[in-house]
Amino acid sequence: MLLIQHGRMLWMAGWMLALAMTVVCGGRFSAAQAEEVLVAAASDLNFAMKELSAEYEQQSGHHVKLSLGSSGNFYAQLQQGAPFDLYFSADIGYPRKLEEAGLTVPGTLYRYAVGRIVLWAPKASSLDVSKGLMVLREATIRKISIANPKHAPYGRAAVAAMEHAQVYAEVKQRLVLGENVSQAAQFIESGACDVGIIALSLAMAPAMKTAGIYWEIPADYHPPLEQGAIIMKQSKNQEVARQFLEFMKSPRGQEIMTRYGFTLPN
Image (cartoon, rainbow, N blue to C red; front, side):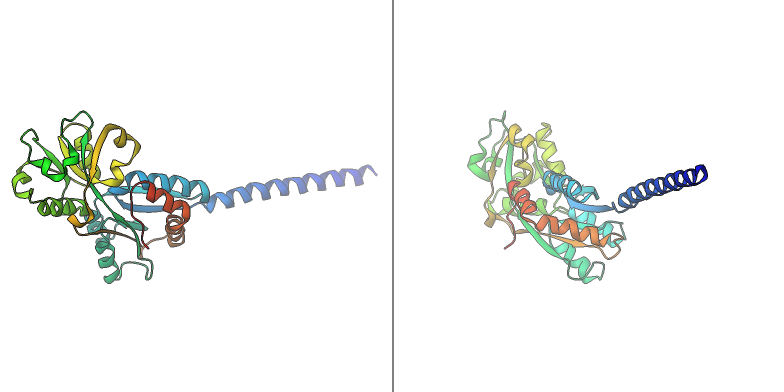
């Protein structure tokens, strides 16, 4: 009898150990399912993308590693094989070129938004930005910040808008070029520049909304800032990249984008 009871105790102990191992291994298996998606995004998405990423991570358990910069610089890097899974460009022309070159997953190009630009100045400034781009002619303005038009779509839009308002020739010597539109915004916010033309999405972020005032530049002053995202063929996590893109398309993702001033695609 004692031998039978001892055997049962050993069997129960073994069964409980097996169950514990199953739970532990199950936990490890679940953790192993968490993937990291590498996202290259235009800097006008700075605040919107950080909010999108945080909510996606919370819902999915996956991690978003976000790199922000100029669309043109990312385009050049991706041509050379930079290891990004997903590319968000402020100019849809860049991902289209990558698609034409066969570097992307077919059928994944998505026109996610149309951007807008604003004339922005600190609240302490004496400038009346409601006068529009004509205010840039004022002699008190020493430096005007914009993104570099060579590789930043927002910089090209800023130049086009100033040309439309017929002020570009007068003020071009006072322009200070940021590497991207986010850096252009930092130049004004820090006081290094007096005024600038930046993305509406940055001007609507809580910190900048508190620190400055802006005038929205009419959409017909410049070519439309059509923005596009695409999944790269070299991506090792294409499924997670698709999931993140679908989250942006979801009602919650669209609400976040709208709140930061983006016009959404039809």
